[in-house]
Amino acid sequence: MPNSNTHFSNLLILWYIDHKRELPWRQTKDPYAIWLSEIILQQTKVAQGLPYYKVFISTFPTVHDLANAPEEKVLKLWQGLGYYSRARNLHFTSKYISKDLNGVFPINYTELLKLKGVGDYTASAIASICYNEAAAVVDGNVYRVLARFFGISTPINSSLGIKEFKSLAQQLIDPSQSGTYNQAIMEFGARHCKPNKPDCTSCIFNDKCVALQKNLVAELPVKLKKTVVKKWYFNYFIIQSEGGNIILQQRTKKGIWQQLYEFPLIETDKEIELNQLIQLEDYKELSKTHSISTITLYNEKSIIHKLSHRHLHTRFWLVETDNNSVMEIPLASITKYPVPTLIENFITSYFGLKV
Image (tube, rainbow, N blue to C red; front, top):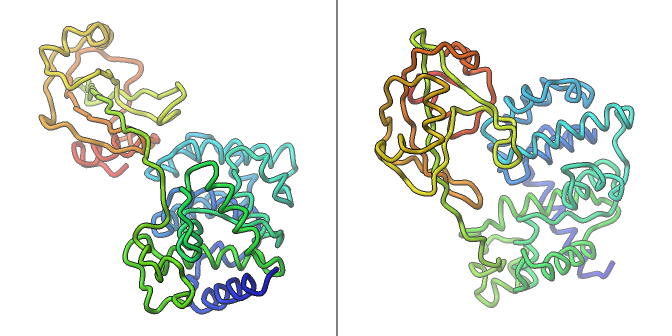
């Protein structure tokens, strides 16, 4: 490794030793614990992910415990973290490791990459931290540090950029302490080389950072324009029987919130009023199935729930029924079911129940 690269990695590691956060997954090299933390922290900040990690590792101390748990329990504990495919993949992979691999994790990057839900970043993190394999991690923090230090303007979400940054990261990693180096550069990006207003005056690289020298800190890294956000219109029906029981249904189709529970739903192509709603065939079928007697709108102004590529404009309709449906559950039991954050917030605000 060239001397300049050695200097870069040494500075990072020295900084990390002095500034790293004491986090539970940094106290172990158990691949199960590292894998669990990395899956939770995908697209999730440490402050939000840490409580979830603690709950998961205490509830499922081993990969066998996670594998033997019902999927519904896994989804319930995941509730609020979003990107629920991570939780489903986590559970699927735990069963594969427990049964097919006898609880033993793959011990190198190439084999780790074959696990469902494990991509380049996660495989690199586990391989380097647990087995000291010189596999460089590249996440948002790493992109930012490298783009600024080296003055790279190649878009980080382009195929060319992904290859360029991965190649550079691989050149920089210290093979003698790969896990420490990977954690160091991620921590540096998260805590010092921040997206907005980083403290460049006290930066360990301020004498060599190209972005600082050329006044490009705010412009780097470069990212191609995001996918156009689509608007979806949701109409949820809060159907309660005379006894106060409520109706929930499970989303079984692939897509957002698969296997989570929600209230009966009708999707429309625009926001509609009651007189338009009752003309819909889907509503007529719903009304017939549940013997709807009265319906009123709960929120005049739609609640906008933002996901990565879509915004859900949501109205909740309060419904009374004389029908005793086999699908209804006691209101007090609603908290046992895994639900999306949008539904969780409604249950908390309307029923006063902590989900």
